[in-house]
Amino acid sequence: MLLYNTLGRQKEEFIPFRPGKVHMYVCGITAYDYCHIGHARSALVFDVLVRQLRHMDLDVTFVRNFTDVDDKIINRANKEGRDWREVAQTYINAFHEDMDRLGVLRADMEPRATDHIQEIRDLCAKLVAEGKAYATASGDVYFRVRSYPPYGKLSGRSLDELLSGARVAPGEEKEDPLDFALWKAAKPGEPSWESPWGLGRPGWHIECSAMSESYLPLDIHGGGQDLVFPHHENEIAQTEAVCHCHLARYWVHNGFVQVNAEKMSKSLGNFKTIRDILENYLPETLRFFLLGKHYRSPIDFTAEGMDEAEKALHRVYTALLETQKALTREKWKKSPLPAQLTEDWAAQAEALDEAMNDDLNTAQALGHIFTQVRLVNRLLEDKTLRAAEAGRDLLQDFLARAEQWNVRLGLFGQQPEAFLADLRRIRAARRNIDIPRVEALLQERQEARANRDFARSDALRQALLDLGVSVQDTPEGQNWDLE
Image 1 (cartoon, rainbow, N blue to C red):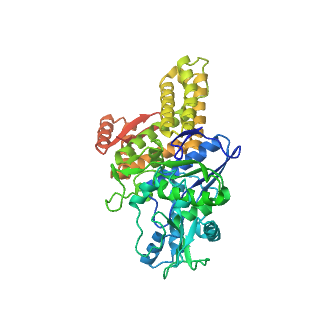
Image 2 (image 1 turned 180 degrees about the vertical axis):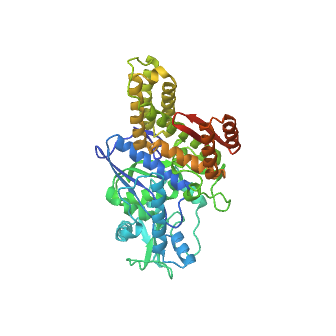
Image 3 (image 1 turned 60 degrees about the vertical axis):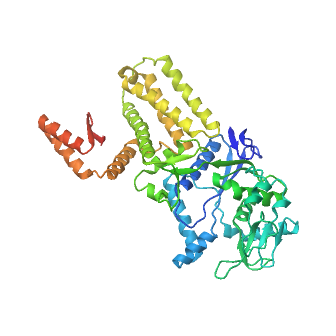
């Protein structure tokens, strides 16, 4: 498998440190608010990466942390008159609820910063003892950036470039504008812990170094592209300065999410939480949409893009439903399938594997899935092929492959009839279509057809069309969907 390594700025063959085993650490949320679509994308990218590694029969230990003490958490707690621990727990619970809905697998380990205060203090003390960090008179502890010569190797930034934008804020006691905080002296009313430098709390970067320490060396360290600098750059410096080893062999970062071609921000009024989106779309639609672009590419969240994702899911689930119906046949004929169809069907499974092994190219993998759906639809539309034993075998293989797609991508794993009904319901709600009214018209039309009142039946079909509803008459009865 090839993975793009931010550190090497190229795709590299993935070779774990420990044969057959993978240690992967991904930076999780700071628990002060509901998760937004950017969090969803990052979680999904690494969810699919874990799934792919396990598909390769690798034993994966997946660690995703929670930052549960931070300025933002403290500010929210003060604003709402709540304990900071309560605020953090509220949004950790919300994270789990949102990710469960999106089908994101739970991490094997979910460390919290406040459970690793001793490890954080120990790391700070080692860095101070080795001259890589220093304590100030006020009780802050800073990392000496210039004590770590490779600083900037992940982001590609030079010290001169960084220095041009660096400033020492009023009240800071840094030796150098480039230095960053490992431990912050306590302020009145803030959470704090005892330390050799007085009461204080950890800085953001050192938390991840402490939480990942017992899994070193990491095979993969991941997160959003926004974390490359300064967070991951600082993690590397402070960890490697102490352990004298590689923090991680592969650094994997997902691209940004925009909303309607603009950077997402509360000030622009385009801030999209996962919960906002799932009021109007099914969770699998959001998952499909986010996996429809290569993970390193930027992605633009739009209603049009989500509508297209719905249509794509509708095609797959309809093919699955029609396949299930076709397989209820009791008698099958011996006629063969066309050689080209058989060859194309076999080739697509291998092509999907190649896409997933080429830097987790989910967009290309989905393309190969839709090629398979087209082949299945071609078979279903041909009465001769549909009745052949060889056709039956291909359709059974289609269902088996769909089960694997669910394992690897977290897609197409629901019961088709139930999913299509849910999709119809949420689309109708978005368009303010009154479903009880639709059902009443359908019932009336069914009675008209039973009475052979075809003029009335046609008039009711038109009334449904005027509502945006199409009707298809099948041996099983009326099927309806939205235009």
